[in-house]
Image (cartoon, rainbow, N blue to C red; front, side, top):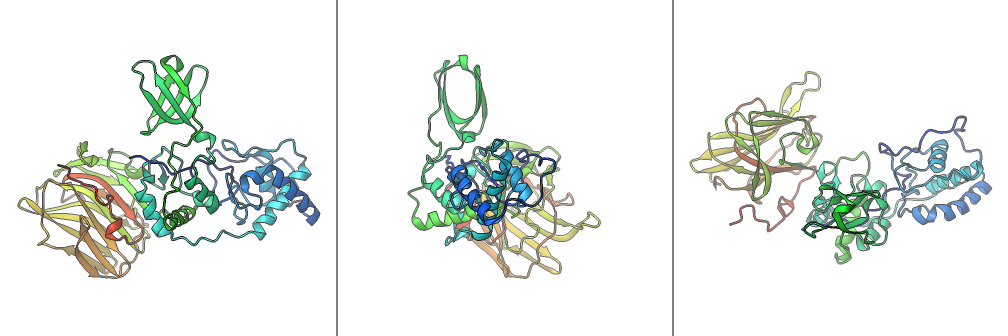
Length: 479
């Protein structure tokens, strides 16, 4: 069932804070001759600025800059620049395409006084205490199916807002309130809409995108963009409700951990996990892909997958998603169909930055075919250290879907099939540098794979089997 994370995600930033800048949301150029240093920065000016802030800004940013519908201001991190001049420009002009308005009619000295108070908030405030466990919270996020609608880095979907840097845009207090009461604050960009077609009488619910006198556009709950002429509709409703459920029933510890995880998502930090879905041939995981041979997208019991013929089908993907990871979990869901004894079906390779050539540092999954069965071969090399994990007695039938994983916790390298450990070795592996990946073949175009790949996930920490893909209890091979 598709669920959405509540208004954590609905409250679009009227944001000053966090040190990254989003395209299209610049506060605009500073006025010519605007001083770099605040000319109204005395204690008396700051006191006036506090009163102005509390009346004009506090209802969104919190009376002490703790954040709310607007961004957190009491950490000293400002998304569109923290200089006096930059803050003046942001407050004066507002932020286009957000809910933060400018104050063009406020006298310039009063804008400077608000700047003085905001700078004071940044110096005197401190981050909220966070007693939660963000690692545990990441597991709760996954189990709640939030990624079916929201994106973090390259993982997730686009029905709801991107959460990649939500911790830099929202206070922990606001995140918690949004999870428990999604009706409290619904941003204009994510209002619900419901339409009924005259022909057939079907009702379609979704997110309101645009509307004029003659037509309406929405994103339906499957993530599809839909456009209707109003003459085609018998009803258009704008219910003042969130399309997401409340998470108020989460146990207190789970709620605390979920909030901690969301609060940890900040600009400039790599996401803990990256997921590649093989539902197309180009742009896997958002990365540029070269298609070799004629692999094809198929419908399978697990969803979309890419099928390879074992002769010359493969994908080369311009990313090594575990580059720089000191610990990791490399997972995939695939179906082996037989063929040659040795088949390398997923290969991550480091490249030499000076020459652009592949080094010997690599991570990979292979299968070895034994009659109508197969066993897993996982391999990892970094510098002079390497380990191959093969359990020839752990045989599995061909033609079925499996989830496999390689895990490195900084001391031990392990591999799993369907959550069952099949091999382990103690080893010291240094992080890989940047590189690329091949799927359906070894990186140098040999040992082609016959079968299909549905999904891969790359996590920059060692997961336990309980955290592996897919969710516990899900069947890969329904009867």
